[in-house]
Amino acid sequence: MNSRARNGFTLIELLVVITIIGLLSAVVLVSLNTARAKARDAQRKEEMLSIQQALQLYANDHNGSYPVSSGWNGYGVGNCGGLAGTLTGASGYIPNLAPTYISVLPVDPSFVAQSCAGYIYNSDGTNYKFLDHVLPESYPSVNQTFYDPVRPTWAWMICSGEPACSTW
Image (cartoon, rainbow, N blue to C red; front, side, top):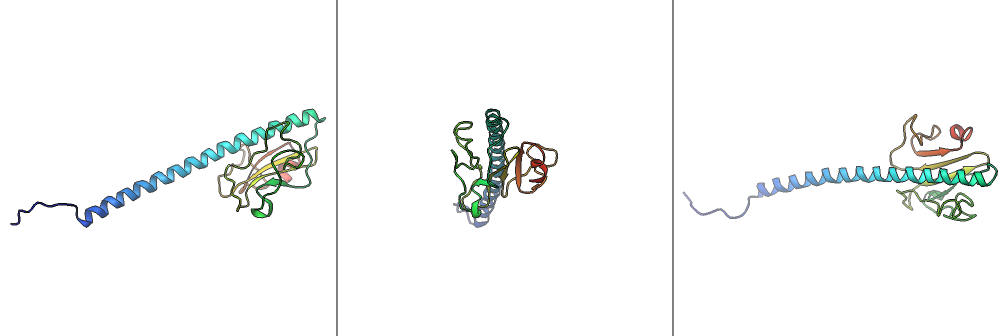
């Protein structure tokens, strides 16, 4: 019998340890990504509620009228990556809302300049619809707040009422 002491680890032992570490890392990364998505959803909800409140304050000061847009205005959605609109003043993607009624118009928390995602707004003065075009995040379900029946698989919504909520 060879009585020499064994020094080090075998290749099999090292591979087993590396595999276990890899599996644990994968589980942690999946958990972190889920937590990040939930955090972005929470931020999105807060920003949309802030916009809704700012729009109501604007309407209170302007005889029930909302800021008028020339079609859908947005930030981060123009030409799918080109920035459309600005974040304040008369040229803001919601005209004249910031800085008087909200300090600055928000940018979607998952905003990436190369994507077709971001906040968009449309109003005829009487009604408005504000959307968050989200890719590829979560979406509200039927009967949940922020659900858009027109865009159920790619947008979050707040609106003033009919016809904007169900047809725009």
